[in-house]
Amino acid sequence: MASSAKIFDSIMARFPQRFSLAFAYGSSVFSQGNKSHQKNMIDFIFCVDDPLPWHQANLQANNKHYSMLKYAGPDFIKYVQEHFGAKMYFNSLVEVENRLIKYGIISTTHLIEDLLDWQTLYISGRLHKPVKILKKVENTDVQQALLTNLQSALHASLLCLPENFTEEELYLKIADLSYAGDFRMYFGEDKRKVENIVKNQVPHFRSLYADQLKLMPQLHWNQTSSTIELYYPKNRLASFQRQLVMS
Image (cartoon, rainbow, N blue to C red; front, side, top):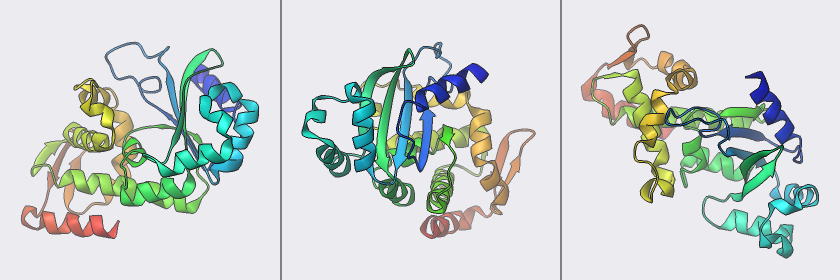
């Protein structure tokens, strides 16, 4: 773990330090059980208040990371980022500190919008699952949006489950929901990916959702047997729908 922390610190030090949130994710960070993950490409997301000065600084520091778009300048890169797809800009297959990485940039505003409204469910879906936070969140709006995103994922998943189910079944449903915003799941991605993720990360999912599960009066969570029972099934739909609207 210590060596992993050093790797992340060394990589992060190579970038402009203007993050509202930064995290690493994927099979290089958390095992998915099907292969060794020590040399997998490391995936990062960097959230910044204003992408323009960040790209300006990063073009100076890491010009080789960018594709031919760099010749159009940082203003154009920002335009592409904020007007297409999930409103993110990615540099992929970049070698940093002898590791292959991919990193995406998103503005704080667009991060919060997707966390609250699931506009694309891309970054919000990614944050339904365990990630390794690399930059402590100090922005209170981001903190609240992250919490709301988890609550919404939990409530939406509970609507799809029976009265009694296991903790793992809940996390499978949450992870399955999170991939609704990832087009790769429809084109060639391992169809057992969700199962591999959850089975090898149950403790990480539990730490992510435990506080919310404990606060929900509609269910009983038996942590010893890892089972969950929903109360008031006849009113469950209306109850969770109200909570989704409130979130």
